[in-house]
Image: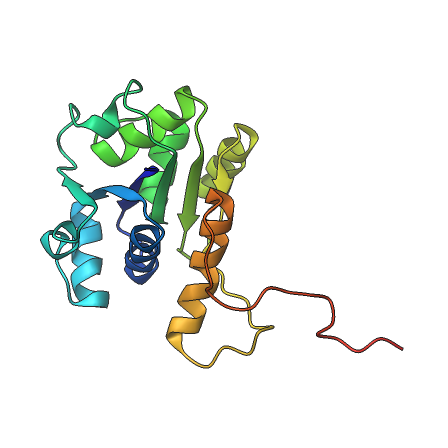
Length: 192
């Protein structure tokens, strides 16, 4: 059974992380979940749930962000993907600087050192120059930088449609089959 580490950090956009977890569970994945203290605040403000609520879902293991001895902190523990969603600027800066002072950043750095799939989903806007430079550095190392920027060409009708658009892009990067919206065919625009 495939396994992912999902970290929800302090940027707005907790809905993206929750939807991602639900989709991964629906696809048969196991999730090791890390939620930073600021991530927990946004989870409550934006979704009305606690880390414990998410941790009670079948297939989810809630890990303590302060526990640097947790399974996801070790390169010998095999995970198929690591996703930071949403990723705060602080978390982005720490990962790019090699700072592993909590489980969220340590897990991301394990993904880097083990050459495993790492997807970072920044949500903050505008983006500061230090964070742009950090993302460029991580991208050069093979990290997928996938901003939470929904597209509008499918004529979204709800917030769920916008959230699904971004989560679909994350799932595509992970190789997870999904049915979150229509795929572009090329026939959407008339040709002369």
